Amino acid sequence: MRAALQKSRISPDRAFEVKYLKAQHFDPNWHFHSEYQLFVVLRGTGTRFIGDHVTPFTQGDLVFTGPNLPHLWQSGHEYFEGNKNNWTEGIVVYFHEDFLGHEFLQKKEAYRLRQLFNRAQQGIRFVGPTQEKAEKLMKELLKAKDFDSILSLLHLLNFLAASNEYRLLSSAGYTNLLKASDTERMNKVHAYVMKNFREKISLDEVAEIANMTPSSFSRYFKTHANKTFSDFLSEIRIGHACKLLLEKKMDITEICYESGFQTLSNFNRQFKSVTAYNPLAYRKKYADAGYHP
Image (tube, rainbow, N blue to C red; front, side):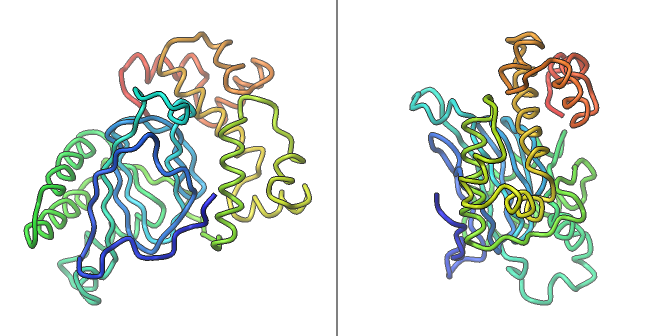
């Protein structure tokens, strides 16, 4: 498992980078970097991690993250099985805060943009018509050339800065304390949990993967993830349950056990704790309405 990439993702002769991504699955590594990142999922499903925030993602997921905010779009297990009918697509934009110059953001005209960048420190998910319009603008940005590409990026950022159709993701108190060596360790933990969350997972076995004692791992994980490992595992399982509820192919009891819970009562309790709904109410509100929360 690779450690976080530390080199710049932007060519030295460019102000920013925009890329179309198509692969069997998204990059499975928990990582962070010095650039701002705007990413939209054009195809694919899975679990998204932004700082201490965990939730399922589907097509159309559009998130803006600030510098050094750890993140990961973990494709579902089906994307790692070699089925050629499963693949992912997305568009990603990278840029530095000073891509328009060191003092630009301090100017009066950049006030809304400065607010947008501040919110991005927690990660921002855009929703509704804003998401739909921003996705179109990102597709146009892919085709723009030379100085027109700068104007297209500014138009996109100005549009996002003016919108109130967004949700902040990681908690306000979240601070990235990870080092490169930590991301490698956390990647091992993430990979193990994503592969095995449907089964019983003990603290002892995860601590062994991290090469730590159980008590040391518990303290370490809470420091870096801003939550206990037990809460993290529960969120992964609930996220998978949300995906299954939206697909409407299983009943509640089947989803409970398929998501790694041992009893229906515990599943219902944990689900409501994370989502504020019981599973049936969640399905009625979101799956029947045809959209994702």
